[in-house]
Amino acid sequence: MNRFNSLFKKNIYYGSQLLPGKKHTKIIVGDYFLLKRKYTEQQVKTYAEISGDNNPIHTDEEAGKKSIFKQRVAHGMLTGGIFGQMLGSTLHDAIYLNQTLKFTAPVYLNEEVEGRMEVIDVNYKKKFIKLKTSLHKIHENDKIAVEGEAMVLYKYLEE
Image (tube, rainbow, N blue to C red; front, side):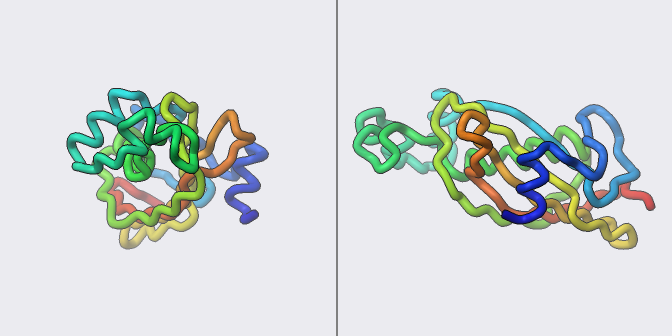
């Protein structure tokens, strides 16, 4: 287990929690974002329509039951979208430069999950922020469902 995951598992944070509704300018390594949510039937249906990903494992109850997961699961890319939601609501005007995603466990419909992002590097001169990203299954002992890293350009960043 790496430092990031072990710290989040123990709820130990080095920095400050960045909250929505504020203009953040002083961001340092260790600052973090948290967001809990569930993916609903309607959200999965809408995502399937928009993306064209109509894999029955997401959209059909019987197919979900026959799958290795024994029930329907939310689209991986839909669950990964939580990181964009977190950035958009907390770092207004941030420009997403890249994001890696590794899907490690299924997210079931209406399952409570928590998105977590931690600042792991800051380049004040270029105004880049590098983040470790993860999505945790709250009722499965904090099991990680999605993990990766993101890089954003944030024009308000100050030393």
